[in-house]
Each structure stands twice: as structure tokens, then as C-alpha cells.
Amino acid sequence: MPHSDRQQVLLIGDDDRQVRSALAAALPLAGVKSAPTWFDGIAELTTERFGVVLAPLEPVQHRAEAAVAALRRAAGNARLVLLTPPALEPMSRGLLGTGCDDYLISPVSPRELQAALAALPPGTQRVAAPAETPPETVAETLLKSLPLAESVVESIASRPHAAVAEAVRKLGDCLSPLMRLELRPPDAPPPQVEDGLVALCQTMRQDAELLGQLCLVLPRDQDQTAARHMLARLAALLSRVHEVEQRHRRLQKLAITDDLTGLYNARYFRHFLSRIIDLARARRFPVTLFIFDIDDLKKYNDQYGHAAGDEVLKQTAALMRRCCREHDLVARIGGDEFAVVFWEKEGPRQPRDPKTAGHARVPQTPLDILNRFRRMLASHEFKSLGPHGKGTLTISGGLAVYPYDARTMEELIEAADRELVFRAKKSGKNTIVLVGGEEHPHRPQ
Image (cartoon, rainbow, N blue to C red; front, side, top):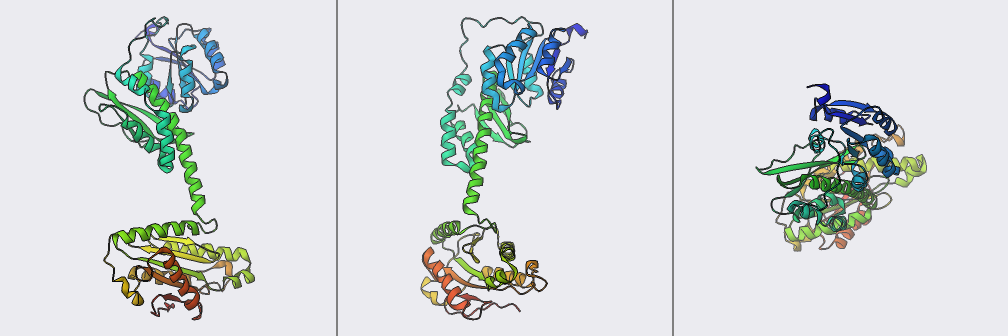
């Protein structure tokens, strides 16, 4: 192909060469010239003619209209396409009537470049829009009527920890049967579509992090340009929603977590125990509550300092968390007081008659876990306690089981705490005591 017939493209910016790579795939025969800045691009346009100018919006976002107008005058009849991050999509849309011909959401794909650059052949004169606007397609009308703001606000309010997925679901429910909206992983291939349909995908980003792909499936004969613009706008909006979602999760973690140990705090312990007892009542399985504290922690604080005492609390918490199953809850509910909620996730059990609570037996799994914990505690080296720290730390605890020893959350906590305070401590410490008169010291061998 002679040089004069080649598509001549001026590419401004593109420091990471992402657009150049996409251009090479989309238009392998195009002649591409690079300019590092908008100023350099305008200088190139005064000395050479191009069919297409690709320019990044972000560097000039604070003076966008003036910059686009200057580039438009210099570009002449060249097709001017802005490259914009998702967050600036509304600004790019507003610039369509002030000098630019189209815009693409970065990072751009070869297919998107082909669609944008094929809209006008090189050298075509730009003409004013026709007096009469062509009728909207069904898809375009439907996409414009989507309740974006309402759906996003409702999603944040109802499911703040999963607002993005909920907003996509709500908006997808508003589409026609031939259209669907999907949220896919960042590296997922485009969805499989049937004949007559096409899938448009837009990457969602937050700074340099890839959040996912927003994919819209619609009939092939509908207006794909309007769909691409709507998809870009929605991706930018949902990227901001993701920030709100992450902030909610951080605040929620702060609200339910103990700062020192990283375990759940007393507030969340009571909330969780109440819910599990309600579930156990409906599905008929036991719930075991273990409350324990560290024997003579004050002595360690006085002898080694509070920093050493804090380290003991953190290591004790970590040891218990290692011993427990993933679904059991471990919490710090006081200064040196901890609670563990054991429950049977694998399914309903037939409990013994609650009337026999005076002879309650703890399910074997919690006992196995507690024995393992005591062995680890006895062999662990607490370096903050000096060279003699190994084996010197002991605990005392009380165990109670729903529904044998208590029928409510408050009764269960009171029963386990009573065994800790009035039996385990008074029996000489370093002891775990069960409700119901069963002596079960569990002293390490």
C-alpha cells in the first residue's frame, strides 16, 4: 500500500505504550507518530497532516474545553478522539459538542480502536449534524432510561458490603430479555453469546487496580456506540461505589475487632452468640461456650511491664485461633478474658433432652480443641517473659452448653462465667470446669 493511502495517526502521550500496542493490532498498516504532550502534538499538526489524532484527556482536564478547541483548530479535518479514564467519562461526553469527534475509555482495546477510527475514513471532511436526529434504537432508549442513581443508592443502603454486585443485579433486572448486564473477573474472557447478539465489555479500575469487567450483551443490530458510552459511564460510577464498599468494610472491621489481638470484640461476640443460639434452636444442634482468662496476668504486668503483658495477650489469642475451626468464633471480651463459641456447622444434630442439663456433656470436638490449646500453651515460648517463659503461662476457664445448661444467650454466658469465677479459680487455677457438677480439670500431662 502506498504511503499516501495509509491511515496517518498522531498519538499524544501514551507513556506506557498501551495505545500504540492496541493500534498495531487494530490497524497494522497505519502510520503512527508520537508526541509526548498536547503542546508537542499541536506543533506536529502545524507541520504535518493526519487523518486521526488520539489525545489523553487527563493532562488537560482542568482546562479541557480550551485545550480541545486549540487541538481541534490545529487538527483541521482530522478525526479527534479523546482517551479518558473511567472517572472522566462524563467530562468526555460533554466535550463531544465542543470539538472532539469521539472518546474511548482507557485502557483501550484493538476492537474499540477499530470501531472508533472506522467511523470516518481518513481525510473525510467533518460536517455539521443533520437537522433531524435519527430515531433512537430500542437499546439506546432503554439504556438512557436505566435508573442508575436510584439503583446505586439502594444498593449501597441495602448491601453496603457488596454494593457493586447488587447494583449490577438491580440494573440487569431493568433490561429487556434480549439484553443482560454481567460483572466478571478482570481476566475473564468475554461472555458467550448466541447468534445475533454481541458482548461489549468495559474494564473497571480504581487507580492501577483492576476491579473487574462490566459486560453488556445486546442485539447486534442495536446502537453499540450508545451502549459503549453507557457502559463506560456505569463502569466509572461503579468504580466509585467500590471505594464506598471498601470504606464500609474497613469501618465494619474496626467496629467489631479488638485492636490489640485482632480477635472479635465483646460487642460482636454477643451479637454472634445470639444469632447462633437462634439458629441452633431452629436446627437443633448444641452450642458450646468457653470463657477463660490468663492466670495471674497482673503478676506478669508488674514484673515485666505492660508491653510484655500485651504480647502475652496477643500470642495467647493467636494460639487459640490456630486451634479452632474456621467457623468457630474467638473473641476478647475483657482485659485478659476471652470467649470461644463452638458450634456444629456440618448440620443439625438431635440434642439430648434439655431436662438432663444437670449431667451435661460437652461435645467431643470442643474438648479436643481445648486440650490441644492447653498443650500448645504449655510448650509455647513467651519470649516477653524472659528465659523462663516457656510453660509458665496457664489459664482457667468455664464451659457451658446450649441447650443443656442454658436456654438463652444471657443464661449461657452467666453459666460459663460462673464456672470460671467460682470453681476454676477457687480450685487452684490452671483448670477448665464444666457446668453440671462434672469435674474435668484438663490439667496438662
